[in-house]
Length: 119
Image (cartoon, rainbow, N blue to C red; front, side):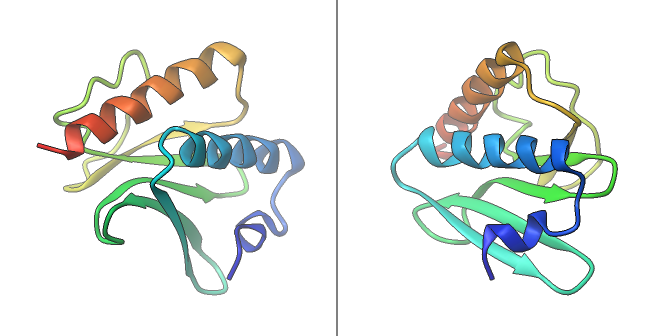
């Protein structure tokens, strides 16, 4: 399965946001790996470093949002991102678009998460 499978049938603005997030995730550290998981209804791209089970971020699309999953939020500075969820391992941010300011902030948060994952 490819990242394009995640985009399939989703609104164009959310596809664009998802592609921007994917680019950030893959550029923030040269050792980041992408794995795509899911079935017919729900698909997710997971980004890990080192081992596949060391997940740092995830991207999933719904009809309303591009959801960015963030791991290590208990230890990493998430700046002013509106973090949601009660997940044991990951929290999320719901996005509809990506401004340059938001892109800069997400990039820094991703770097903070990578740093936090080493402890």
